[in-house]
Amino acid sequence: MTRRHRAALYAGSLLLVGALLPPVTSIADHRLSLHMLLEMLLLALIVPLFAYGAGGLRRVRRVAGVHPAVGIVTLNVVLFGSQLPAVMDLASKSLLVREAAQVAFIAGAFLFWWPIVRPGALSAIAKIGYLMVAGVPPTIPGITLALSHHLFYQAYRSLEDQQLAGLLLFGTAKFALVLGTFVILWRMLTPEPEPPDRDDREVASGDLPPGAPAWLERLDEELPAEAGRPRVNELLQPRGR
Image (tube, rainbow, N blue to C red; front, side):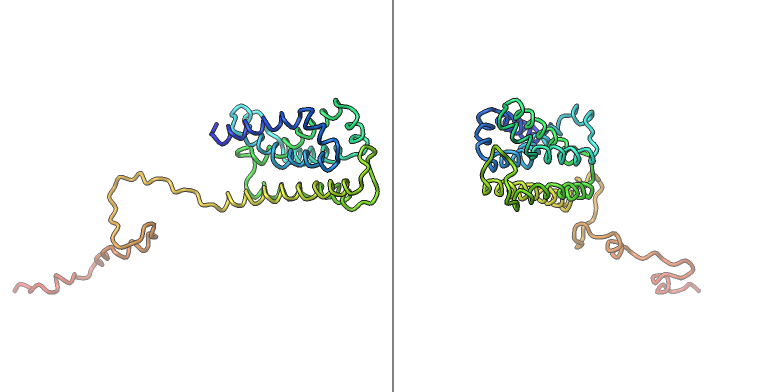
């Protein structure tokens, strides 16, 4: 495991434990926008950080293989399910239901990000397509909450707070997917470092720049003598009588 994976795993684990503690969940339950902000932090920052760190574990990489379709479906199931009025109202009254819903949301987010962060799971182009497809469904609940003039939840009686929560859901989900696409493009377009030259043979550099093509180097070589034609030196020498 590299240092980056180890640091991401430790940071993600601490943030996950903190997000599940009752003080944090209790504060988030006071307003729907705070509850949505906590879920979006889990989706866009904490869970990807933890998943990236877990990708450095050899045992996890060998046994855990998730099909991309499973990741997209699972994320949208927990994302839509966590926004249902019946689930939200029940979670605001029961600590057990609230913690169970939070764990289910974290598991769905992990299954979604795992094909992205797991080494060798998908190519760069496939990851971009994966994020584009996954970014379509979250717009539905986000726009519904942001543009609705009807209260959906009994536990949260503020229409402005509900609209703000919809904007957080829509904007944060889109931002996370766009940022992930940008990072993949950046890594794909960044040139890989050239391997060291292990050839011990001396190469005459001359006036050619390093990395010059082979056809340019051949211009400095002497032309081979053509068969059947006397060389210039032979023509200049006097012939014997």
